[in-house]
Amino acid sequence: MALTFDDAFASFGEVAAPLLREHGLPATLFVVSDHVGGTNRWGGKADMRVPELPLLDWPALGRLAEQGVTLGGHTRRHPHLTQCTEAQLLDELAGGAERMVAELGRRPVEFAYPYGDVNPAVARATGRVFGRAVTTELRLLGPAEDPLLLPRLDMFYLRQAGALEAYGSARFAGTMWMRAQARRVRAALGTFGGQW
Image (cartoon, rainbow, N blue to C red; front, top):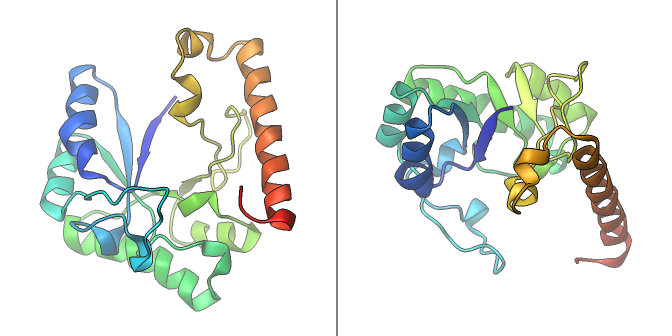
């Protein structure tokens, strides 16, 4: 099991990191390089469903890395990667990784697809820059996973009493499968019928 956090919100450094350290839990934090020290207003656009929140700055990220937090890439500007041209895609992937090297002195190996937005072309391009990548596909990790298409379970699904204890059971796997099917149906309907 791995604990991952997207976007590098300031609250990770203030709240999550101390708790993780206290309990000896490793974590990976995915960084949007051009927004470090700014906010999660990706592309300058406001999303009324998502509050504008501050992001960690480079010195704070450096301290977290020194404390054992793995820093991964999450692009330069948090776009929908399947909508990028090939040149834009390379800029988002390699440009974000290069900025992290310049600011922190280390190249990220892990990557998280913004919005879970990935197709075969995006996965191939990601593999030229990163060694592993996580999606938002809702399912348990299997024995022979593509390292560029690793699934993740959102903590949202583990917040109820007993859910974490049930992790790995047949009942838990069945519940995750049902939720994944519901997501696929919503996505398909959203494609034809607009936003949900």
